[in-house]
Image 1 (cartoon, one colour):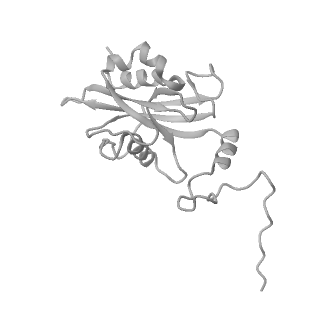
Image 2 (tube, one colour):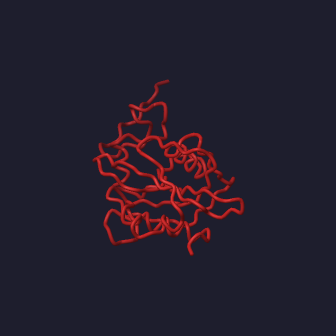
Image 3 (cartoon, rainbow, N blue to C red):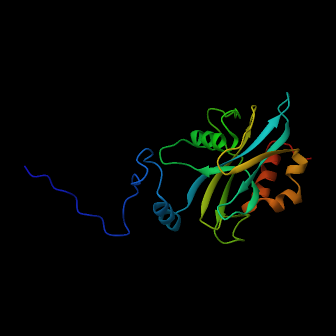
Length: 195
């Protein structure tokens, strides 16, 4: 009995599989695979607006990240990141909250988180309120109460806690990347924190 080896895939049509350099996480794409995927389809993201609440559940503070981009630009943003293949939305949101805010942030996620909106990012400005030079992305956006200590990690430099009024200001919106100032205002409106 002979074993038939499959024919090689044509160049440029390789299946997305475990990247050669990252066998420990087969759900992660190599840089080349990611660029190819971004040229062909929208990417799925989760975004979290971290908040602190009082005893009645009213939002008292909003956590805004200060982040450095790979090219050295500094901007304000919120917790954001891709959903991995096979990962639940809740797990992806928790992972990115922990990555950006630290393991002691203690986010309070319900068993089935519900986004306050779906934001669609386009590579060309003006198509929607949201813009991302790299790709077309669809993002599920959540308001997430946190109760612990936030110590930024990865590319987040610091977390600044602002009042809802400060977080909804035009000045902050101008500092935020990709239209996320609009997203923060929508988050605050969704929990009744804008007056």
